[in-house]
Each structure stands twice: as C-alpha cells, then as structure tokens.
Image 1 (tube, rainbow, N blue to C red):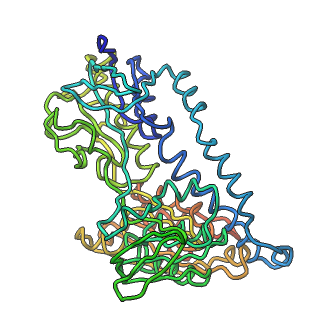
Image 2 (cartoon, one colour):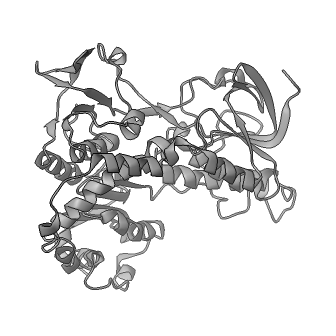
Length: 481
C-alpha cells in the first residue's frame, strides 16, 4: 500500500447527504475527498426518491384527469407500463453517475471509489478492485453512509430472493403479482405504483393501521384508497414462512392463510449502514447508529474529529432532512477547521462555529410526504407526540373540501387537514394534510411551525381564492379566530 493520501476532510458516502456536507466543507478552501462504493448520487438518485416518484406520477396524473369532468371523458386507458419504466430510467440517469461525478470535479472535490473502513483516528483504508488506498484526514471525517433494508427473521424469507426497495424501483419488467410486507412509506407507495402498473398487489402489515408514524386518519384514508384500487390489504397479520419455487413465492400468514405471487417485496424498515465500517478500530460498536449532538459530532469520540449525518445517525431517514444535516455539518467543519478558525469572529467560545448553525440542527419541523393517492404530508408533531411531549395541545380539524378551490381541483376530491397547536403559546407545532396534491401545500405549514408563528398572526396571511390553500382560513376559523 502506498503512502496515505491526505485531505483536510474525508466524507464517507457520496449520496445527496454526503455531497452537501462535502460542498459546504470545501467552500472555505478546505481540501475534501468523498469515498463511494457504489454510484455517486446515492440511494435517493437511483433506487429511492427519484425513481419511485417517477413510477408513481403517471397513475397520479391519470387519476387527477379522471376526477375532473371534461377531462375524465378523454381518458380511455390506464398507465403504460413500458413508457413509465422508460421515464423512470431517465430520472435514474440510467444508473450512470457521470453527471454527478462531473459535479464533484467542478466543485473541486476528490472522489475515491471503493469501500472504506476505519483503521484509526482520522484514518481509513479504501478497498478498490483488489488494491487498498490509505486516506488520512488532517481535521475531520464525516460519515454519511446511509441505511440499508432490514430483512426480518422469517422462516425462508432470506433465501426466497426477496425484493427490497432497490429491486422495486429499478425493475425492468412488471411482475404479474406482488406481495408487499410492510405498511410504511415504501410499502404504501409501491402498492400504489404496482397497482397502477397492472400487477395484482397484496399488502401484509402486522400493525393496526398503515403509516403508523402519521396521524391515524391518514392511515385510514390510505387503507380505503388502496382497497378501492384493488390492493388486497391484510392488516394485523403476521408472516410465518416464505418459500420460492419455479412459479414464484408463497407467503404463509399467521392466520393460516397463504398468498402466492411472482415476487415478494420486503418493506419493513431500514437500519444504519455501519456494520462494515471498521468502527471497532475507533472504539465504536459496529452495526449501531452513530449517536451525534446537534452539531452532528459523534458523541463518545474525543478530539472533535468524527461527525455523522443522515440515516447513519438513526434519526429521521428522509433525503431532505439528511441534506439539511449535511449543510449543517459542512458549515460546522468549515468554521472549526477552515482558514478563519482562529478568528474570534468566526468561532465562539470552545470552538463552536459562529454561524446560522451555531445552535446546531433544529428538529422541531421535520417533514414527510407520502406520494400515494391520496397524498399524505405532515410536519412537526402529531397529536399523540405533542401530548407525549407534555404540551397542552389543542387540535383543529377541517375537511379539505371546505376550501372552494378543492372542488375546482377535482370533482370527487376528499381529504382532511389537522393543525396541532401548543395552547400555551398559541402557535402551531404540527400539521397533517391528506388529499390530492397536498405535498405542495406543506411548506406553508413548515414555515409556520419553524417560525413559531402565532395563530392570530397567521390570520393576516390571506390565502388566494379559489385555491386549496384557503383551507388555512378554515383552520383558523375552526380555531376560533
């Protein structure tokens, strides 16, 4: 092995989270290298956010057209599977990361391809095609290796060649039938997509309701919609055994029934990708999430050199929250170790960065969108989580159709909106939207929650008429304003 390559900062993982961290870290002149064992751009670009939404969009558009008189009469067919997959290929860049690599080059960020493992403090080895490259960071290593699907310990499942989200979003031929295990975001989105693509879909979920992290009415609305789409929904049902033969897979259920299909998709959760990082070489437990403080520094590691961001921390696993964390950690590292690090104006007492992120990450307004029909979007706290946090909670519920724009948007549109209010301060701490195209309404709620805008101030934010956003007026009226 040759002499180590030395950089100021090393980022492990070139997904969108790592890219953001690397970009922000290099802006003050620090030299940065990112290590990636697969494709630059990561899970989101090739196997998650982009291809999954490309699969979902055609069915969404057709359903919208069928919901409007005058357009409905012109809709004569269903989703074209071949054309949908071809469009999906475009948004996944045909699984070619050349464009992302050119972006790194343009930003002056070095790319080292291969699998990295820690060998000691600020030191990693990168295995690449039978050779090993040693890298050393002068100042910091940022871990942004993401997460990986969990395959439950069910008899026969691991050997039945199950799909994970990767296979589901990159498939080149739609199977005639599909069993989905899990009722979270991946499960309900893929149930929607594959029902649109013409597959016979069965969704098996152990829980009482879909989307357990959301408000209960969201899961109830999705269950009704998926059933209407023809999805065979099995709630409160365990899987006891899975077997594959020449005809496909057979999934045996806890109630004694069984379901046969061409493929089985496991969508039961993910775990931080830390098993094979050599964490034991720096005194950390392999396989565990990397616990961090609000400036994304890994706790329990002396020397202020190790940081982690995104799914690998075990916090909320969404791309947008991870990219937000990437921007924070990149700025923190730049402020602590960049050319102005010794300038009192650039860093506070104890070396804390003096920047808009000096207080660290703000987790009060985490957002989630589920691109099903209806869409589900929420920010901040649900009613249950707000009460569990000890808040004096006031809940305001209105029907989406109470806004005149909703009826114009779709003849048969239905949905519900909930605002969770901290009664002591009279400010919103959470909001949930269920209905058509509500993802585009979410950011207004996010601004209100992040800004801690009192309801009597929101009263003066006049929504345009006739839009679905007029539901904000209905919410404030229901709140007594």
